[in-house]
Image 1 (tube, rainbow, N blue to C red):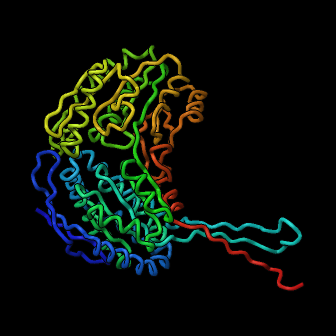
Image 2 (tube, rainbow, N blue to C red; image 1 turned 30 degrees about the vertical axis):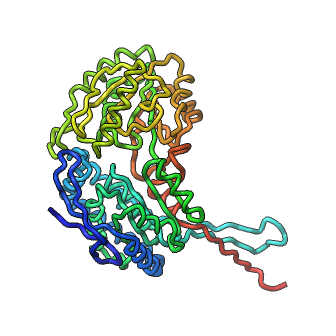
Image 3 (tube, rainbow, N blue to C red; image 1 turned 180 degrees about the vertical axis):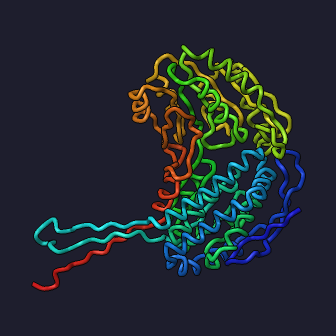
Length: 476
């Protein structure tokens, strides 16, 4: 069993304590991880603040080379990283490999963006009194940035915070989700094989108490968080003077019109609803089907869902692995039962064995029930029928969340209507809300948080505009 130490000031460091990480699939120990206490977290903050004096002076080419080497090394160690993700997160191995491939791309895009942090030249001679004056605008790194990441993408969601921080010349501290921290610490080994200054990246699994130093310490200028609203919003209150970005999940919906390519839509919805056991912030939780195609779509969707293989994430043929904890699996079982008691019908699935939950399709669900209203984060999808497109959009908006939504239609007017009316951060036309390419702006509204990821957009969040005014007229 591999032992993983903390990364502080460029060194692998012993933690305050060690913990065994257990497989979500069968409960066997898969790693031993060192955890930080408050003193070690403070040490990391101090080292990052010191390193910032170097990282902010790195040329765009130097930042590019660091990120490019990280990307290449991740590619070289693809199978090792994929195995790590499958073991600690319970993600099916094929999906784990896809995540590694995405992380390769995320770091490579960040490398390119490091060379494209442009400024602006503004003529200020708008009045006679300001003749011969020019404004020069540049972006400057903020300083020490803290990233707090969830369990569901142990590598690529870390990449989405670490890579733009490096690209923009900041120093970075990562507090990864405890369960999947081995993957983050393995990435730390890769990062420290580059020429990044010591302390430029620090990685510390820790308790909540130790992590609060990141919110309270003035040297930390920004906190970027991905996780649940229950943690995210109170976190923001604890850091009122810091820049904060929050990505807090959702209960994503897709609307399917009669003119859609149903074969394509079904295959995509199958992926969007059940990939990684639904434990994705933009997993499809609600499907709105036009009455003209309701039966046809649903019959085939159910048939395809029944073919999915549930089981060991390390086996190549597995489609749906375990949920991350027994508590999460038991909760969704309760929500399903609650819906059934309120008149819902299980079309397929609905059973649980340990952490494994069958891919489940429900209809006749009251919209205010938890299985529809809240974030399920499970392999469960609720089906609704509609006959009016405008009303379907209103039904999508009947949610406290607003991350992404999908609409399948070939009608351009309806596509733009959805773009205008849907209260979400991203509208995906002719694809599922689960679609994400790593350089696009990504984030939500309402309870889904605020701020944007996607490398260039994250760089903007992690930098400050500064203006220099030049007066070329120096005499009367």
